[in-house]
Length: 136
Image 1 (cartoon, one colour):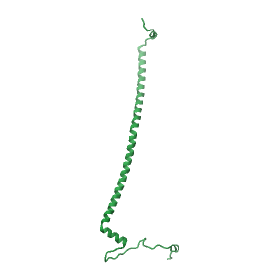
Image 2 (spheres, rainbow, N blue to C red):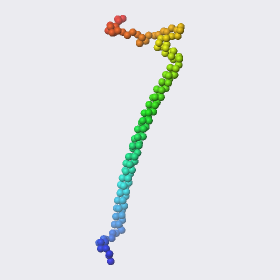
Image 3 (cartoon, rainbow, N blue to C red):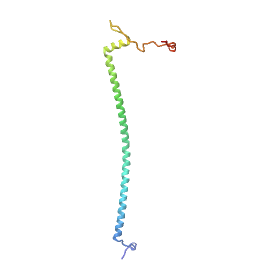
Image 4 (tube, rainbow, N blue to C red):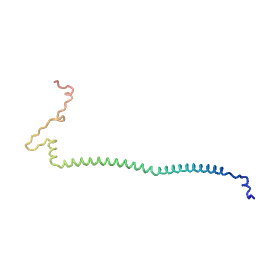
């Protein structure tokens, strides 16, 4: 009554054998799913890195440029403030009078200028005087 002779030589397996085969297959499928999951996570991590890393590096570069620019801005602001302070002083007539008195030895009518000699005002010794210092 068999239609196909191909299936005649096969014996029927017992329930215990079928359960063992089913457990082996399920164990193999679990291992395969775990491996596929790891491969998937590695692929996502790689692609994420390829997308995010260049943007992150550019962000770090821009932050460094920003910090450098801010430092230069602070320095320029300090220089501008110092220049402005000098400009304010230069616009003051009393400042010009003070400079004229100090540098040009000018005085008001009736004033007497008394200057203490400084190292710059002392005459420089000649080479002969340097070689033969005076004896005290």
